[in-house]
Amino acid sequence: MIPLAVPDLTGNEALYLQECIASTFVSSVGPFVDRFEAMVSAAAGSTRAVATSAGTTGLHAALTAVGVGRDDLVILPAFTFIGSANAIAHCGALPWLLDVESEGWTLDPEQLEIELCQRTERRGEREVIHRPSGRRVAAVMPVHVLGNPAEMDAIVAIARRHGLPVVADAAAALGARAHGRAIAALEAELTVFSFNGNKTVTCGGGGAVVGNDPALLDLVRHLTTTARHGEEYDHDRVGFNYRMTNLQAAVGCAQLERLDALVAAKQRIRARYDAACHDWPGVTPFPVPAWAKSACWFSGVVLPEGLEPAATRALYGAFRAAGVAARPFWKPIHLQLPYRDAPRTALPVSEAIAPRILTLPCSAGLTVAEQDHVIATADRLLAG
Ligand SMILES: *Cc1c(COP(=O)(O)O)cnc(C)c1O
Image (cartoon, rainbow, N blue to C red; front, side, top):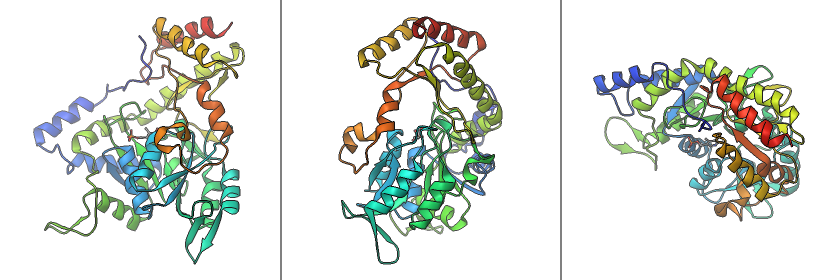
């Protein structure tokens, strides 16, 4: 079976892990953590980074740092991984779900502006209140979905005008560019990456919060390290134990040494599927906006409109029978049990695209021969 996405650990990963063991630095203090933070920051185009135990915990700490708290709302696109919504829920808040645009499947800035104008009002100088629920809106959380950057210039401008901080979920977007700029140069207060096992760059598990405001990044670091100050056991608020370990960072450093090659491999794989799918009736490539360079985290195709769920399931089975791991992708957040009551707009794009996405093998280490087999299988199953 050609797997969907497995890590490529052929660099210095094993060497650096052995260094951790030999030095006994296996926990959250260690030279690889510092090096990893510097490398992530440089790759992301930011000045500061705080490594975390996961992308989700990084998001939770970032949202807490910008002031998201109990009963608040955080604006989130419905088309995202459930971890984005869970980070909001871990703050005691709820996602307010908006749709994505069809050009790149990221948060629709036009709808963001309309919803903020029509459904919120100012209370005092600083508070934005969602009129239908009476809840405070505390932040906007665009998602750089699948490695596609969101339209940050527009989103940040709208958020600033409404007095809202922006925390970007860039989980799988390290290496992406928008208008030629790196992902964390896009002006969100905080940007959060994931280094989970299936991401292009992995630490086994892990995350990082990056940004340019030293005070805010210090607060994130404080929150992730049990909010301890000084050498004695004094803690000034309820903090988290969300730090990355030196073991995770050792793997991460070895991965980041090859970031450009890993992202380039992902982009090459995407380009081959994009070219091949023109021969399959009704099938379209994953979209990438003209102004963006996607990090191409996952690849695959968009199946024809109107395919019955049973036919789609049969298709997955046929791919697997041919030794090709093909899978469906995320269901939008409003269709997930924990978030069925979250406030939301109409979500036609999220609902239309989600059932049509077919992910195909796209490990950075996928060989040309393996991808030939995937494409030949798709030729047989999708051309008719
Ligand atoms: C992977 C991912 C996450 C979660 O990251 P973890 O490291 O698994 O916690 C969150 N949001 C998006 C968009 C992701 O792709």
